[in-house]
Length: 228
Image (tube, rainbow, N blue to C red):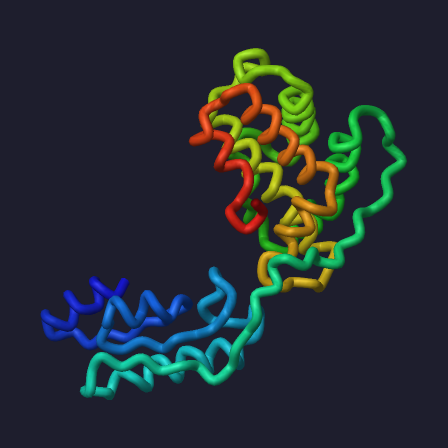
């Protein structure tokens, strides 16, 4: 972004940007940057806090009048990244005990997922490999992989496995939005990988496939860098 800002400036267009990594902003020497020490992925700071977000934008646009470039200002508020702390998100009880624990758990989250889906006017990231109806079967396939089946055995390619893990994580994280108000940066992600049967299953799948010599370019995508 710093390089692009300099290109626009050379063409006579004033620019301003938001920085989340100060050293990158310093090295890039963009004409005008507001550094925000917020968690990565949240350049405007606090979710659903319009007043705070407008303050960030107001401070950024105020830099447009500065001619003493490069300018790098700091937003006065620091928001710590608490990604290592799992969200307080209790899993709903389920009377359905048929099948492996991760499959049972995924079925038990369906009502929460549906409430979350309705609250977001039907917008979802689930659907690369399976929709919500197909999540339990998808989890069953992951159980087979964790137990030693190969990708050929289950009829998946490497890219299918990656997309399936993304569907599962999206299903759980979207369901969690209906179960907790704890929305700390990446805390729902940590909840998924540390507190749920499905998240632990994904870790098992990665470990099993790594031990079997599956391309790390595939298995490496099963866990985000923050969970390794």
